[in-house]
Image (cartoon, rainbow, N blue to C red; front, side):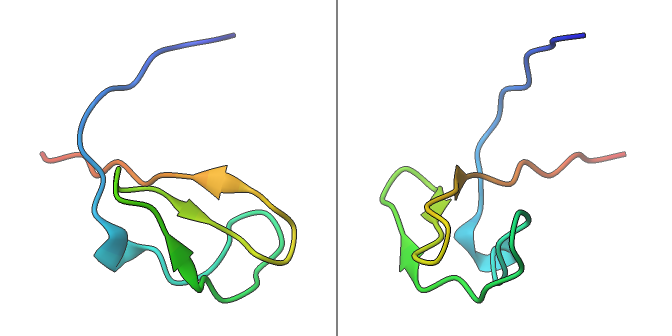
Length: 49
């Protein structure tokens, strides 16, 4: 099943890679991060109640 989530990400919530667990040391200007260990590029979208 595929879906679409939109929103803004906050790099303050990105400390560790969700794929390999390595500490994140590279953040992008678009609110995403890249793991230098495994190359995983990701963003975190928070949901409000």
